[in-house]
Length: 334
Image: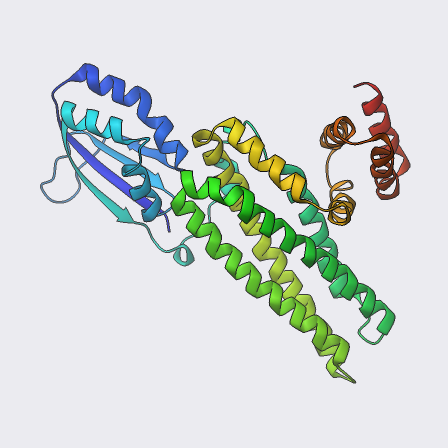
């Protein structure tokens, strides 16, 4: 849950040092997803005798993250500078549990301008496209049409396989980077992955149960499957938002660009041709023309001509004629 760190700066002994502190501390706070919510005042006493000298409050995603920031190598020199230049009282506070307060619109305040390299953009758009299609298919299928149910089973299994592969590659190649730079957030994401594994296992169980069901059980089984796929979609969307608006900006601030690019290159290199085919069938219709041209431009630069032609055929199959013509025109200009 959200945490709040409150200081009352009672005395400043070295103003020049404090000016240096103020000029550099915000970058360390934002690197851990923090935000200043109170700096100085004005303030009004309404009860009691406390008269703050100079109150400062910082909001962090959780108490663990607040302590991670406070004890980090990034903040330590500034913390020592502040201690030498001033005297303060401080407390760290847990906020109200999430279930008791409205959820914030995280994307509205995300520091996306800090993102130099986006490892999620295309693949997350493709996964969302696949999840939305899966919800629609699971909800619309006739439970008594065995061929239609089998087709939905294949569609869902193909999607779940790609989700498994995506998570495995992310854990292997991006996970160590997150653990090294943002260990508290890494722990949180690991818990989210575990919960997604549980929901995915339930979808697979219900898929098998629907194919084995008879009579009226098939209609109820189809509805249970639909609800489970919808739950998986909602859970996955929340997880993607955490990665995109919390992890990605923070990781771009604390990790070297080469580290991010190397992790992404390792993920791409680990994708088999069969899985690349599956990913592209989701990604190509889900991204905008600029993303699509950039994606295919990169593949053209790194793939043999015959491989790139096959990849371009996938785009032709997945796009309407105007969209495909736009892609080829964009590629011709680069």
